[in-house]
Amino acid sequence: MALLEVKDLEVSYGVIKALKGISFEVNEGEIVTLIGANGAGKTTTMQSVIGLIPKKSGTVIYDGEDITKTPCHKIVHLGMSQVPEGRRIFQELTVYENLLMGAYSKKKDDHFNEDLEKVYKRFPRLAERKNQIAGTLSGGEQQMLAMGRALMSRPKLLMLDEPSMGLSPLLVDEVFDIIKDINKDGTTILLVEQNAGKSLAISDRAYVLETGSIVLSGTGEELSSSEEVKKAYLGV
Amino acid sequence: MEFIETLINGLSIGSTYAMIALGYTMVYGIAKMLNFAHGDIIMVGGYMIYVGLTISGNPVISFIAAVLSCIILGITIEKIAYRPLRGASPLAVLITAIGVSYLLQSSAQMIFGSAPKMVTVADLGSISFSGLTIPVYVLVTLACSVVVMTALTLFVKYTRTGRAMIAVSEDKGAAQLMGINVNRIIMITFAIGSGLAAFAGLFMLMKSPSLSNTLGAMPGIKAFTSAVIGGVGSIPGAMLGGILMGVVEAISLKIPPIAPYTDAIEFIILIIILLVKPTGILGKKRREKV
Ligand SMILES: Nc1ncnc2c1ncn2[C@@H]1O[C@H](COP(=O)(O)OP(=O)(O)OP(=O)(O)O)[C@@H](O)[C@H]1O
Ligand SMILES: [Mg+2]
Image (tube, rainbow over all chains, first blue to last red; front, side, top):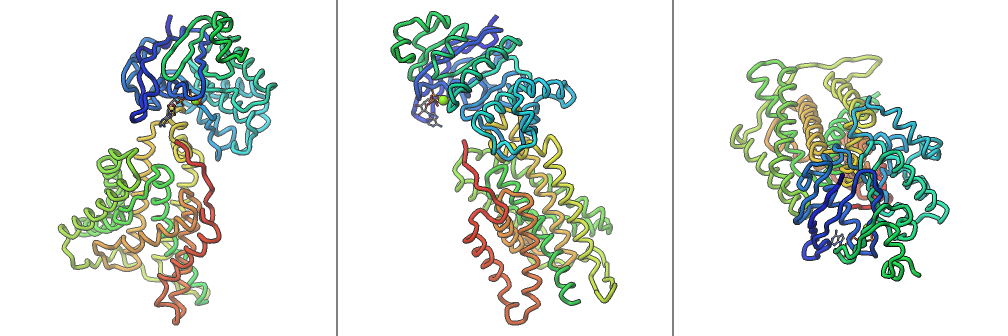
């Protein structure tokens, strides 16, 4: 069953058409990746789906509900969560307070401690540094925090916008392992990546975005072996 | 002894500035706008106290009515005048705020006339102890300020809504991704700022009973200066800046050769502090985000 269904989505920034009517879907339990070069419209897709930037036309159905015009904060309350491009953690708050913000959409008693323990278990670094001001964390730690924060709302659909950006190769592998693991625990994943090789390897399905249009789609394996993808995104 | 009296007086003037500065700084930090009309909310608070006293004769009831009216006024202004301009150019917002300021001043003049009203909130007298003579209103001002500022600090640090305010001030987009309703947080910020302005109105009328439609103008500018000195956007900064401003003012007024230049001295201090630390005393450098 499709958890997220995007139909003919168009988004413009003034006169610039960033998305020219894209359609895709994410089924429950899947890992779906959007790959594309710089400026293809990946971040625009993520942000317009979750209601952070306005859609020009098209529809977005989430969990059987039309959320095309729903404001971002309400969509989050419906169980969608996003690790945004550039992490955007709250620099002045502590690690713990950031995680508390992540649970903002939940009533405080709703399994808060349980979820916190889970995040600390998944990211032991965060537990060690729970009282540190988040702005002083290393890049890798900030990425962990952004992911932990997004998990605190118990999302049904977790969207990650280039989670491997700026990380060392070792850490990139770790991040992809964690994504796989989160998915195993029952969270549906929509991933945006330039690191096509690693993301296709963990994806059930993927779409290729080129200057605002989807030009290819298929299973992770199909796209990994596609000549076009190999040439353009895998550097083979 | 006289110096201690001056200092205490300065602290009370400073608390008044701090109350107003908090409104400027919180609105600036969270809605990213300079609410030019903020000083005029003080004036409206003053007139509401006057109306309350005329009707009920009870200063406490009048003051509570003034706080509530200011809160409602603040929320209304935000909703009608500022919310439709969210995302508009800062200049358009500033001009609107100036318009709101004139609207409030002119309305007050139409309703209450241009002659100043004499408002005696309560005759409190003064008390003397260990060689000090201090007017009771000064002590009331200080006590109220300590309570209110402590409560505000705890509210921002320890409540869900308070933390949401910090989140919105840091990154509106990320705050929305947490499920925070940014419009609601901005509304609450205006409510708090306007409520604090009513306190400032009370403090000012206790100090000097003359009430006119420009009551909030000069204190508004000085409080804004205080907010900038402390680091605009910073809550402790607004408190510190306000207190500093009040103490400088009280001391300067006591020194005959410089007393006439007190206002100028306060603004010179602003310029010097900004030259040394452009972000203000407690201000942080912040990366601007979308
Ligand atoms: N705020 C904005 N104003 C104007 N144009 C924008 C804005 N944000 C993005 N764009 C344009 O929209 C297009 C898509 O941008 P987007 O950020 O979605 O790309 P992306 O695929 O995420 O790229 P990257 O891999 O570099 O993050 C680009 O051409 C970009 O210049
Ligand atoms: Mg991007």
